Image (cartoon, each protein chain N blue to C red):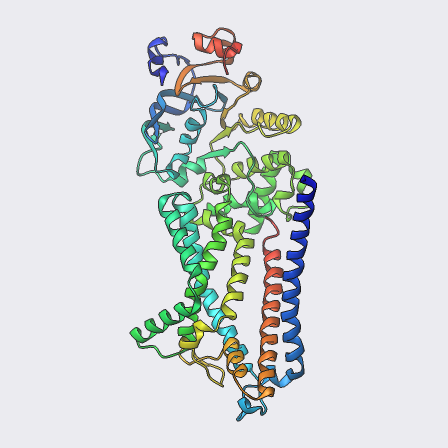
Length: 278
Length: 270
């Protein structure tokens, strides 16, 4: 009986793993299969020309640059907010205090809120402050979306930091701020993971930017201008009845996937270099 | 607590050592943690340039006492401190005194070594740097000097840039000692500093302490009576938050004045 259970469990683990891997590979296959024929140098080097959405020449450079700007800005805003929050919850006050636990619960709830709600909230904020759909609006809204992700994933590693490491710099006469700087070094791998997760979520999200960043065929030159984004480019092109344009949607998806891949590898590479002493 | 009357059973003023030059003096030190009376009216004089070992059973307040010396209790809001701790005549709990200045004067060596997430070199350079030392040459000289002082230089001079985490535990503890010495403290506090180490590494640390007492005042909390016998110039025996006996190891170990000390040393309890 025990042996049978053991075998059953082994089969379960293998089938689940194989199933999910096949599914992911299938998605990748569809993207590559449909996207690759529509892929060309123009796609990534040109902005849409007249009639692009009817199948004529041009590319989605506007959306690529727009997405990088949007998520880049959002990540910078989020890091600037998340790291101090995590430091406060774990190192300034007691990591198990009622406030810390309550805050964690809040972030968990925020984590679960759908992105369209953030989009609507961001839109309301923008209307209130009289800001038009723009790069800035999109950045702030994506930041709202990814801050809970970032805080919770950095928090996971910060929670594990031993008390000794907090006391070591202090016993040398370091101030709170100097101690926190040492701790950030220790948290670096966790921060990288958090940033990558956030980029993944932020760059692929259409709902947040739909109302807040707008869409444009040109590349924004200031944060008050609207910006295009890859998820919306996919969305608009996929909705077209013209097969060529539809295929371009898959090509855009392929670009988005490769973009995330490139960002991941670079971030991992630099993180490894920076955190070799941990 | 059943032993609140402990002080009644003790003879008057167990601390009676003349002709010592005091470095650190506890005056009526009381510490409460979460309302519990942990240290009860401690009056203790730590002599200058010598090794003082604090012994006693687990939970007697040894570590609490040691941590009050470098004001580590500041980090916790649940700790209430009464009384005075005089360092060269100045009360370290005085509001005017900056906690970082106190900690600079007290090098702490923890039970388990805790290296900073940096290279070996950076670990030692960290302290001098935060206290304002600049200049590559000067820093290098300092790092080399203190790594030599703890006998680590020959072992690590070719890999100063590698992670401090790669060192063995014994080497890490010596690195932590070098790191502590590099901020030029007056007093070295050791909180069971050898208990996590293998016999050879701990012998090295003990040897270092005996060497360092020429220049520094050393206070060690230890569980091992043999270690206290080997190293101590003065021994303080604590029990249930009170200082029971203080004196030369010769007196404390061979002719203890208190029955409690006698029982502890003979192994009746631990």
